[in-house]
Every structure is written in C-alpha cells, then in structure tokens.
Amino acid sequence: MTEFALEEMILNMGPHHPSTHGVLRFIVRTDGEMMLRATPDVGFLHRGIEKIAELMPYESFMPYTDRIDYLSSLNCNLGYALTVERLAGIEAPEKAEYLRVIGAELTRIGSHLIAVGALLLDLGAVTPFVHALRERETYNSLMEMLCGARLTHHYVRIGGVAFDAPDGFIEKALSFVNHLEYEFLDEFNKLISFNSILIKRLANVGIITPEKALEFTLVGPNLRGSGIKFDLRKDEPYSIYDRFDFEIPSGSGKFGVQGDAYDRYWVRIEEIKQSCRIVRQAINQMPEHGEIKTKISKPFKIPAGEIYVRTECPRGELGFYLISAGGKTPYRLKIRTGSFSAMTIIEELSEGVMVADLVAIIGSLDVVAPEIDR
Amino acid sequence: MKAAAQYFKNIWDAVSTTAAGMRITMKYWLFEPSITVEYPDRLGKGIKAEDLAADRYRGFLGLNLSKCIGCLQCMRVCPIECIKITTERLENVRFITRFDIDQSKCMYCGLCVEACPASALVFTKRFEGACYDINELCIRHIKEAVKAAAPKSKAEGQNSENRTGRINEY
Ligand code: SF4
Ligand code: SF4
Image (cartoon, rainbow over all chains, first blue to last red; front, side, top):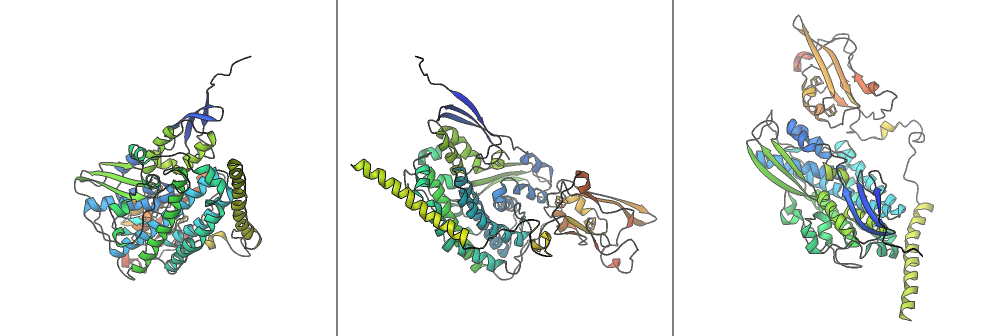
C-alpha cells in the first residue's frame, strides 16, 4: 500500500480570475482543500501615476487621481485637492466644502455597496449583489447629474469644486439616503446579512486581532473591523468633518470572534448608515448660495515645501506626500493607499485555511487592484 | 442529545433565514416592476440612449467652430495630448488649419472645456463610439482652413461662410 504523504500543489490563481477583484494574481500552495500559503503577486496594474504627476501641472493631474481607485474617485480627488491647497495656502469656499463632503460621502456609500455586493458574489450569493448594484445605480445617476460622469467623477478642483449642485439634485440625494437608511439596509440585512449560511461562511474566518491589524498597518474598515476605532474623519478632521455628528462603527465579534470577516462586512454596512447621516446633515447645513471655487493664479505655482495629508477613503487612509520645488509641477508625489496594506496581510491569513475561505478573506478585505499598484 | 438538538437547530436556522431572504427575492420577482431597460433596442419609442443622459453628461467633445479663436488653451491643458491644433497666419489673419480630437484617447475629464475662453468646446451627450477602425474616432473638425474667430467682442460682424454656427459634432 502506498503511503499518502503531504502532497503540495502549486496553483496559479489569476491574474484574470472572477474572484480576485481586478487584475490580481495569487500563487497558491495547496494540499487538497487545505491552503498552505497564498502569495499575492501585485503590479499588473501599475501605471506609474506617481511619475505622471511629476510631468504635468497640478490641475491637470486631478483626472488621474480618479484612477487611483475607480470605486472612490471623488474621495481621491478630495485628498489630492486638500494636499495641494494646504501646501499652497488656499482655502476652498464654504459651499464648495459642503458639496465636497456630500459627494465624498455618496461615493463612500457607492463604494461600500460594491464592496459588500462583490464579497457576497464571491461567496456565491448572486441576488444580493444585484440588489446592491440597483442602489448603486441611483448613486451613479446622482453623480452624473452633479458632475457628468458616472465612474471617474473628476468633480473636485483645486480651490473648490467644478459645478454647483443642479436643480433637483439635493432632493434626489436626500430621498436616496433616506431610502437607503430606512428601507434598503433593513431589507438587505433580512435578505442576506442575517442568513445563517452567510454567517457560517464569514464568522470566525480570517481573524485579525487588533495587535495584528496594527502590525500590518491596516487602515479603514479593515482596521475598524478589528475593533480599533480609528477614523480620520473623527480623529483628525479634515475639510469640514468636525461639524457633523456621526459614529464610528467597529467590529465587536457580532457572530464570532472580534476581527473576523463578518465584522469587516458588518462595519461596511454600518458605515453606509453613518454616511447617510452625514449627507443629510450636510444638506441641511449647506448655504443656499455662495462661491464654489476660489480663483487660483495662472500659471498655478506652489512655493517650495513639502506636506503629507491623509484622508479617509472607503478603503482606508489615503495619503499624498507632496514635495514642491516651486515650479509648475510637483517635484515628487507619493501616494499611500489602504488596499496595499490589506494585501500584505492576505499571505499571513491564508495559512491553513480552506480554499473557499481564501475567497471570503480577500473579499472581506475589499482590495481594489488599481489602488494597490497605482 | 445536545449535539443532535444543535444539529437540527442549525438546519432550522439555515432554512428559516433563507426563506426570509427568498421572500424578498420573490417580492421583487413577482410584484415589483423591472427597473432595467434593454439597451439599445427597447428603450421606448423615439427615445435615443443619449436622451437618457443627464444635462452635464460628459460625452464626445463638440466644437463650435464659429466661436473658436484658435488660442490653443485646450490643447495645452489636456493631460494626454489628444487635441491637435495648428494655426497659420496669412496676411495678419489667423487661420486654423487643423483641429483633431482623438476621442479614443480622451478620458472625458473636462479640463479642456473649462479652459476654453470662448466656450467653443463643449461636451455633447454622444457616447456610442463603436467602430471598426480606431482611427475613425480621431475626429477631424476642420476639413479646410478656417479663419479663427476674433477674441471677445470683436467677433460680431465677421462671420465667414465657413462658420456655420452649429456645433460640429461628428
Ligand atoms: S476631456 Fe480631458 S482628455 Fe479629453 S480632450 Fe479634453 S482635456 Fe483632453
Ligand atoms: S476650442 Fe477654445 S480653447 Fe481650444 S483653441 Fe478654440 S477657443 Fe481656444
């Protein structure tokens, strides 16, 4: 009789695989259904955005920030605009700040809808994904009304925003967030979040303890899923976030252990609610009339200096480190994104789990491939 | 005994929570109207896909040649250099001899539209650009040399027959 020794098989998962989000490759070492280790291989979507920034004027780089993370383009716009504004000493008008916050929070809602929808799709639940996309469609139409593009918004400009809110936008946005908070999320939770099969698949899977989360410098919902209440909107308020009243949801081991995949999923669902609250408050406080853009000098130059500004993106901290040498273009622009640190922990989490759980882990970390590679 | 009870409770949980979800699915399937439209065939009579886009929709770029002053601002600001303009001066009159916009490269960011001082460059709602040859998407707005419009107020009363005043879209 032959003995069955531990037989290792090396598999290639991706770069084009339906359950890796975007062009992403894993080298998977398995023994049957057990995973020994999954090593991510990044870089397929490297576009050299940081280098491109050095070649063009500050204003012209704005559309490229859309492409850092195409699911949260407005938040990336905002991060870059704030960086340049702080170094140049410009302030955006009050109304522009409100429009930015409304746009950014709507984008956060849209991004989280895709994140939870795609996670469920990876696990094999197709219907909730369609429900999430239906709501996202409303968000897309809203943004199309506001700025003319459905995905890469390019709405924020240095010193303000591009357009004022069109007629009917405010009412539509308000009814959208009300529908989302009071109707959709309850229904969605009934549809899938409290489904015991989903709980079985997500709870106690891919546990990240708070210590480990800090060790791997996780940010955003992944960090909060481990129970650490850190949100830059609250802890280091930028723009006008200090004027709003909202909570920071964090993982508490709802159905399993603190920091498991279900906690990360649940944090995103809760964050949609909080974003709805912020949008509602911003709409109520927004001045009716007012400037939407501060005039900037032409050609736009920034005095020599350097700055690091971080903002809270749907995928966590997005930081821009900008060095100016006084010219028309940046001397150096370094971008720090949340998906990259989420990527580094996958290798650690993948040891000794089932192959099907790997998909749940990747999905619950909500990595977006272009954000990893820039 | 306890394990058996847990076993049956698990089954009951899975069945009951799935049934709760299925009820919602059934509600949408049976009682709610469909929210999707079939593109492009069944949008409804006389409705073009372009009509469904919002007013600010950023589609193909359209050029109003009668307004263009040939200042090259749009060409300079474009981050990916998909606008090509050449101008020539003949006896103190400026002619635009070439105005190409490569719509296959364009990322519809809107920087050129904002930069245009004469509001000659605008977004149209056209977005269906499928064609067999990618070069067809490089749209040449000028067939023969056109006199550039005079900047600002001087533009009135100088219309030449080449300037039709309509937006040159395709
Ligand atoms: S929309 Fe942007 S990419 Fe397209 S031609 Fe204008 S500036 Fe260039
Ligand atoms: S389209 Fe506008 S920006 Fe471009 S050359 Fe003509 S007037 Fe200048």
